[in-house]
Length: 287
Image (tube, rainbow, N blue to C red; front, side):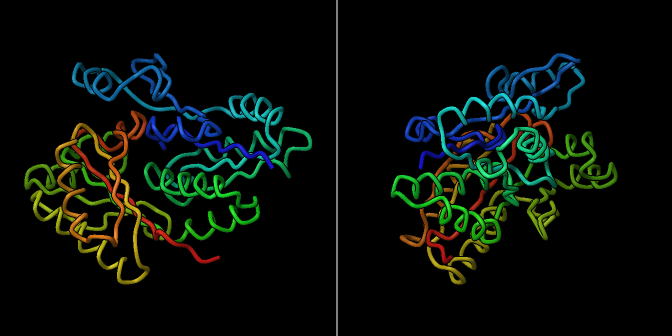
């Protein structure tokens, strides 16, 4: 069976992985600056985005419409037997709902297009997508791939932290009061998923404490479920991402750590510059 993988641009996979797995396709979100729309990952970079913001531009983001998905799905169905459409959780983005609407509007497509809310975002989705691609190379069936995805929807972690709380206020993620206190005291909130919703999981003031916080949680999950596959992302913070990678690699052969691309521009709108994030999941699954 020939299977295509569709994900959204929030995943922002590394070029080497896109080259290795040519059956991965994007549905792109959009960055809107002063009413002009830019295609995420294609027409705007994070450096350009923050230059616009510093110049006082208004900014927001928009979803790929169901029509975008219909066009992509119909094109792929002419070449593939099935499509796994794996997306950022609906608690962060409505993209997965656009995908569902598109699937339902294509006659005879419900059995061929499997739309899945990953229960995670960004590098969390990337981790699952790459695992699925590796299993596809091994010749695993569609049924087993779906069981593996279901396993990892509930067996992964994602933590993100930022330096500047201003953007979270701008997009309604936290209150102005929390922003003033956080910025004044240099508190870095650590955002993660709890019951599939973004919550503040911790607060740290220094880089050293951030690395310690991440490493403690990684070690806990290693004890719980064995070797972990870790992906790290950042927003204009490659040095911090590299330090985090080196810290996590002190766990030896119990981890496999990758530095992924910078977070996509649509995600950067919400989390601001200077942040770093890590997602991990068990290297081995049980289905």
